[in-house]
Figure 1 (tube, helix red, strand yellow):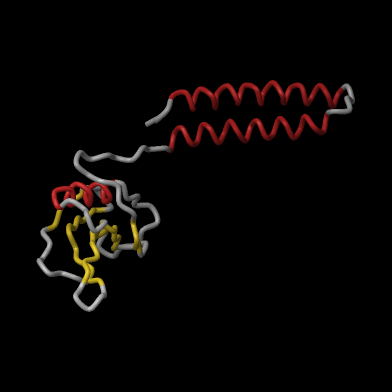
Figure 2 (cartoon, one colour):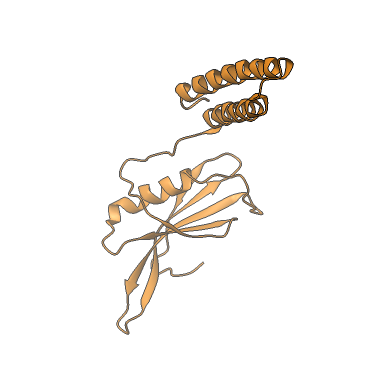
Amino acid sequence: MVSDPLLLQVGAWLAAAAGLLGLLTVVAFVLRWGVRFRLVGVSSFTLLLAAGCAAFAISYSPRTSIEGALVVPVVYDNGGDLVVAAATADFPAAAAAPTVEQVATNLRGSGRRSSDGLVHVRLRQLQPEANGSNRPVVLAEAVKDLRSGNVELVPVATGRTRN
């Protein structure tokens, strides 16, 4: 799916310009113009820009936005089966499920190595303890199947602090 038709059209125009510059470069070599070697660089760079624009237009997929979700930073990603996002201290409880679902939906499966093909995405919050330290508490969890792309919300056990 092409995300931005303008980008694909720019790639086509750049490819046409690279073709014309290539012809001009051939003419420059035949007529032994002094700028012939500069035209080689300009032609090849224009061709590179055309290929880059076309590739980006074809491969780009925008992030999914889920209603009620807030933007949170990913603080841990082992590249396999676990991703942890951090919620702020004033994070609303109603936004936990949509937020973890949004983070899971926007994960890309390429390059992940998971033995069962599942990635666990957790939203955690640091809650202060009486002794001055912080205790991580999991607010919401989702599991993404890398093969199908399906995201399923998982009920979180109360008081859960670790894997």
